[in-house]
Amino acid sequence: MTPAIEVRGARRTFRVKGGMFEPDKHVVAVDDVSFAVPVGGVLGVVGESGCGKSTLARLILGLLPPEAGEILVDGQRVLEMDRKARARLIQPVFQDPFASLNPLRRVRDIVGLPLAAQGGMSGAEMAKRVDEMLVRVGLTVEMGERQPAQLSGGQRQRVAIARALVLRPRIVVCDEPTSALDVSVQAQILNLLAELRRDLNLTYLFISHNLAVVEHVATEVAVMYLGRIVERAPTDTLFHAPEHPYTKALLASVLTPEPGLGVPDVGLGDSLPDPSNIPPGCRFHPRCPVAIERCGSVAPATTPRAAGIVECHLAPA
Image 1 (cartoon, helix red, strand yellow):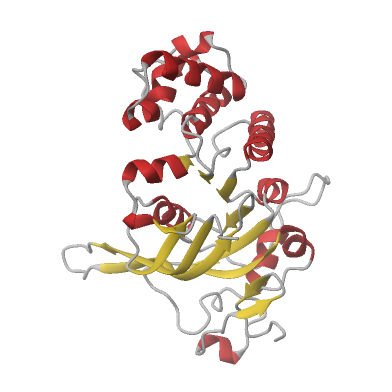
Image 2 (image 1 turned 90 degrees about the horizontal axis):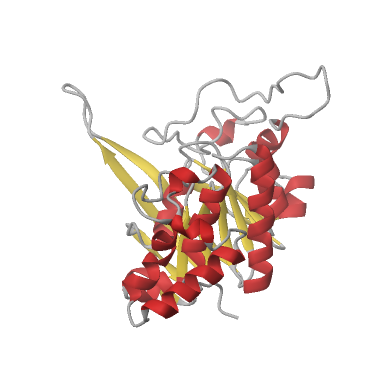
């Protein structure tokens, strides 16, 4: 079966202008990334800020062109698709629902905007589709007359989800969709996304820094570090038997409810990796607690697993 999403050797860098006496820098956001997401699957993408998660999402949505490689959705090259056809196939849900919704428009107009952009549908048909989608995501038809400021954070995210699904796409890219919400509301939105995926046979690319959220929703997890996927595995495998030292450090950093344990020390130091200054060899070796001499000069090969990959010199072949 054709994968819902297929990324083949995608690369994307950005040029950042230096100061008056400094040269411009080139930031490596995504570097030779490859993976496939089957129809109905959920790939969770995790990693620290600046690792390339959001850039990867924009490449898949066709909002940015890759400098190398290619990206296919439903077997079609994203950049070769007509924009309207692409919008019918794949839609985003972004992090901050208030920032992604026009504060001056009514909710029903916001949800109906993708239908209006496609054209070919009468006003009555559009109104019926919008009302059905509002109810489908747990809102009321009456809420369609309100503006975003009159809704709670969770309700605004439901509006964003309704707008994404009103065209009935098959793929949804969720970029930190719950991080701006209270914990209790996060659970409601996650349950809604899971229900919609089951009922509508959706495929998700789910980007998050919250490992607990990813464990709850994803069928497979990809761990990114400085633009590369350093480990990818089924969710149960990755959370119970991680192989890459960075994956192990991320899992060790999760806070536990046990009193007296305090904040865990995972040995990664206080500084974040710099995508404009990629170290030689393994990109993680300056922070790796188990690095060997070879790690500092030789980049690890991508080692296949039964269902996934790992990039580490210390991982068994």
